[in-house]
Structures are given as structure tokens and as C-alpha cells.
Amino acid sequence: MQLKRTFLLGVIGSLSLAALIGIWALLFDSFFGIEEEVFGTLGSVLLFCLPAMAASVMIEKRHWTRVMAFDLILCLVGVFFYVLVIWDILPWRLFSHGWFNDFIWKTMILLVTWAVVLPWTAMLAICRFRNWFNRIRILSIVLVFVTAAMISFGVIFDPNEDVYIRVLGAVGILAALGTITVPILAKVAGIDKDAGVESTALDIKITCPRCLLEQTVSSGHSRCSGCKLRFEIKIEEPRCPRCDYLLHKLTEPVCPECGFELGDDEVVKNGVSREPGAHDE
Image (cartoon, rainbow, N blue to C red):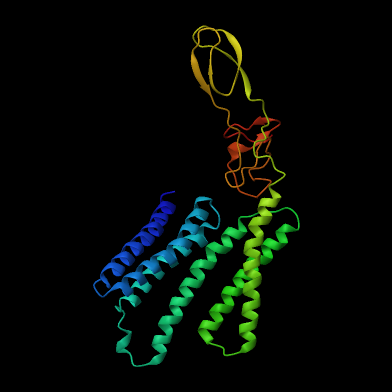
């Protein structure tokens, strides 16, 4: 997807420019006196490009597309806002009220928090389980949202309570544990699945179009045993684009493994693929 590639290039470009400017500053002791602003800008681009890239991956998989589109907007607004603050373009110094400065910094923290949390939870939600693993997945998603909500509450209302800090730390640890555990469980759940399982033989009987010799060949690159004509045979069975589950004899346009919505052309009726426009009798 072009969008994912764009954000990936943004990450690589930010790291590369930061490295080059760092080398310049080491050799010449300064980068025209604006090294802090430049490093801050590159860091901001890197900070928001990572969740934006994750969101674009989710959009490519057609998972939480509206939420991920909102996250992309959030990332773009965040980068723009951070650049204004870093380069001191916002005229908040014209305001003598301290609450305005607090509003600026709180907004910056909230933008980062939710820009990261939305694709974070989407990636946890894309893991699907049929057993009690699914409860761990749901609990992990809830814990991540609770952590983000508590951070937002702390930023907005600034509670000076020791209990709040302790609870936030405990919830954050559990959310981090769930984030690590869910992908591992997804891997464990897929160990017994053979991704290479096929529902049909990989050999096929053909008639050579040149010498008309009937023969049995394997899929892939082959050649006629009579006239040596070379040809290639591809056998591709329909699989779920999200979890790669084999869709052989599917009766409903929904993947039975992960619940992904499929096209009607993947549905099979009585062992025969349903023709476009066909209706049940």
C-alpha cells in the first residue's frame, strides 16, 4: 500500500537526517544554532510516523478502517502542532495566563497518547481466537484503553494522588503484559495449523496444445514429454486475506477462522463454486 510505504519512508528519512545532523554537530560543534529545533522536528515526525504506519497497515487489512483513518488525521495534526511548538511559531507567549501554556502541553501529550493507542489496540484486536485465549485478547484491549484513559485523566486534571500513580502503574504493567502475550498466543494457536494444506492434488492431467499428447504434470514449471514445449501451471486456492485460512467449501461469505467478511464469489454451494448472480433455490 502506498500509504504504508510513505510513512515507512518518513521513519527512515527522519532517522537518516537525524544521524547526518548529529555527525555535523559532532564535527563542527553546532548545526547553525538550530540543532535542537531540527532534532525535535525529526523526533516528532518519527514519533507520529510509527503509529501512522501501523494504522495504514490496519486500513490495508480493512480492519477498523474508520478508526484508523481518524488516527491518521490525529497523527498529521500532531506533527503539525508539534512543529509549531518546537519552532515557537504559536504565539502563546502573547498570553500572560499560565493556563494557556498548560493547555498547549496537555494537548501535545494527549495527541501522542491516542495516536499510539488506537493502532495499538487495533493490532491486538486483529488477533482472533476460538478458545479462552480470546478472553485474554479482550482483556488486553480493555487494559490498554483504561491506561490511555487514566493518562488522559491525569493530564487534564493533574491529580496529585499517590493512589492514582500506583493504580496507573499497575494497569500499565498489565497492559504491557497483555500486549506481549496476545501475539505470542496467536503464534501458539497457529502452530497446529498447516498453512500449506491444500484441498486438491497438485498434479493435473493436460493435453499439450502443440503435439496433443495427453499427460499428467505437476503445478509450476513443466514441459511436454513429447515435443518439450515449456509451460507453467499455477494452482491457487482461495484463502482468507487476513489469516490465510483455506476457504474450501465455504458456505457463507465470512471466514470461519477470523470472521473477515469475504466476497460472494468465495462461497461454494454443494461443492461447486457459486456463479456470480446465482441465487439459492
